[in-house]
Length: 206
Image (cartoon, rainbow, N blue to C red; front, side, top):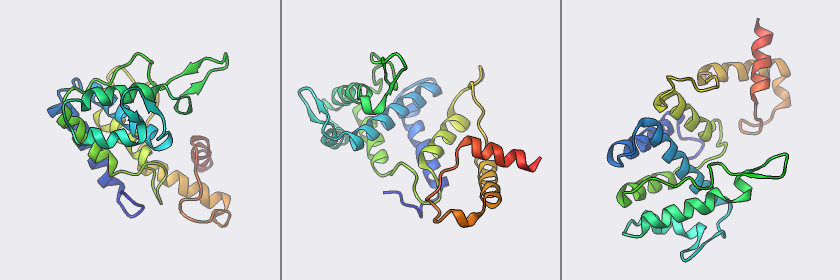
């Protein structure tokens, strides 16, 4: 497992390698489609950790099925596709809209498009070694976001959002902590700084 001592650059390299695995060997084209498939695998991993007892018809528990997929084999692709459908429909991973309607992460009819069992097995083996969530002094999911949007996502038409380089975010967080009084915050991983706090720190500098 990746721990707090693992450098974000190593994690970024692994995630970038995963993208290239799907893009080159897996034949998932264009680059954005490979990003999409990788995020589906991330959702599958998160679902297996949060809802291990979720049942996949004719296959078993979600928490144990990923081990079977990592072994490869003729049925692993169909198993992964069925597991993704279940993971994507879990209420705990989606959102409830104001009108009460359930909103899944992906459209409920969106399939997992990876078709090679060897590529799928290798991708899940690599993902299995990565611990997500806020770990120590850095945020692995934030690193993933940074890697995909800045490094591999084709955004000629615009992303609809702004991606602030990690170094600038780190600077603004440190400035914000200084201005707020560092004594109020105990431990490197005990405090989360949201976009508004970082923006406020930036406004104090100008």
